[in-house]
Image (cartoon, rainbow, N blue to C red):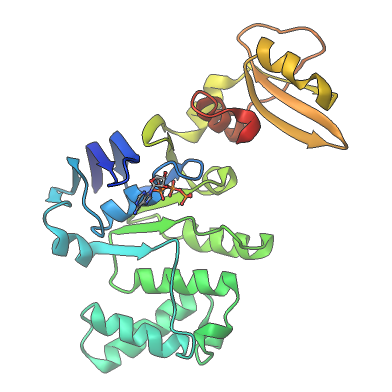
Length: 295
Ligand SMILES: Nc1ncnc2c1ncn2[C@@H]1O[C@H](COP(=O)(O)OP(=O)(O)OP(=O)(O)O)[C@@H](O)[C@H]1O
């Protein structure tokens, strides 16, 4: 199973180029698509989900021409969009039964079994009679996964699923997602580095509509090992450091500014070497396109 995206481009009528010659090769398992706000992630996800057309390029899913054979793709697709609307008064059970019906599960008894299994899977079985409008953010997202799984999809797309979840709900959601990747392609679009480092075996970083990196998170980290240095400075001194070092991230700690820089040799001047992590990988690529201070 593979999804091949080649030279995909999209410019909106207002002149914004959201996708600029994007090429990606995505195999079975959990794939993280990481990028800042406005990178083009949702545009790419909606295009793969057949909800939006591209200006040029191609997408194939196991030989299916995604841009033209939309119905075939939809039969294999589970999609959890960024803004996931729910009917607030309907119960989880009734809504899911309706979705299963739309996805072609005709027999009532078969649907009942499927709905029960899905609700168990996302740990909402005990809440099945509750109206969706009473669900917390985490419960809504878990319900979103249940509806995305209804047609037994081979391609699952989840667009920024953990934004707004508290740490324990995020953990439950991670556990749920990690169980999906075994026999399917799961694309997780996010601006949260932790989502990718926790879940994904492969990833890409996109920014301003371009792919800056694709590969394994561990390879990205290994490449940076020995090149990341850190120093705490007074905030007022920032401009001096900004000009002299390859600054990839800043963080306020107890009123002081902690700088992380990338350098192939020891920069001296009080900088200490630190182990590289996926956030360094992300920021070292993103900082080629966006000022890391305003990230
Ligand atoms: N319908 C539209 N018309 C015009 N411009 C759009 C439209 N949708 C998105 N854009 C612009 O295209 C660019 C990419 O947007 P997109 O939503 O794909 O990015 P994103 O990575 O998903 O960002 P976010 O994390 O903020 O959702 C942005 O500059 C956005 O303002």
